Length: 354
Ligand SMILES: *Cc1c(COP(=O)(O)O)cnc(C)c1O
Image 1: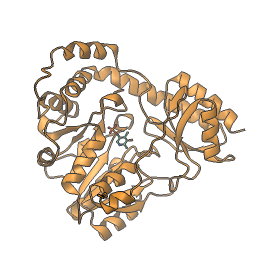
Image 2: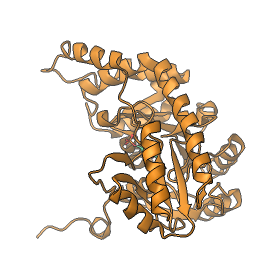
Image 3: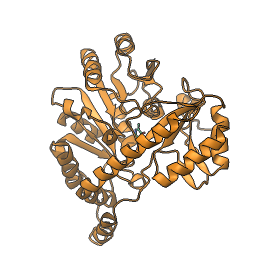
């Protein structure tokens, strides 16, 4: 009987458990629906799609609109079905058998998972005690393994820590010195004070990935992208399947970009709400990490993290249980919701910590 590739057979799949609850604060989705003007513009645009034809393979209009957002041309934008597919395409292009990717844990589990699926070896370094990027450790890993691809995640999921510009510049120098590629995953970039997109240049081996899933309230549409040098985008376009981006998604994304102001207002609202949540959490018997994203990592001090997670579920509140992840013993991650949802979470948490 046919068996999967040996390394695939040994792999654990990626799981994000869903439980039927009233308050879902476990996957960092936006708490609000997209603007109504977007929904109605989308339904009328649907009438105009030539459904019998393949979509625009180059997704030119969408790439131009995204490029405008970052001050670059469409030739510097690669678009795919969620930023996970962007990452997968990067790994199919620059990783693979005989090549290596580097990550610094704890970080987004899919970086190493996707790398392994593409047959790329993974080397794991560690973050500092406070989960910031430890440049000495990054240097150690890069010099030892000379990885083709190095991943930073800023703000980092699940810790919320933002790498500052000096840090990213330093890592970029180390990566450049070994002829590698630096991927900065900015799935939560809009919630942070700066973006590594300012460092992008023709002869700079840097790409920045973004997604419509979080800030843009469009997780259901599965749309993500990358900003980088044109030559890298050209290589990615060779690797991705033809017509991978359907016409509906292209229209949805292009129309969304006509609502940048509303999106920015939501970001400000969530950042403000994050401040409120952090200060309320600081008054409870938990450790809290500062976050530059739309979620907050915390650790109950007196009660086991998994017990608190279960008690929250019993009160119909779902957060992400990170307590079995390396270095995150006892930690939980809560997504910033509406202030109503966050109040329900806080009162459930107060009870759960008793
Ligand atoms: C949510 C998330 C993504 C996103 O994924 P999509 O495939 O675009 O939904 C990528 N990176 C990080 C760090 C994330 O948290």
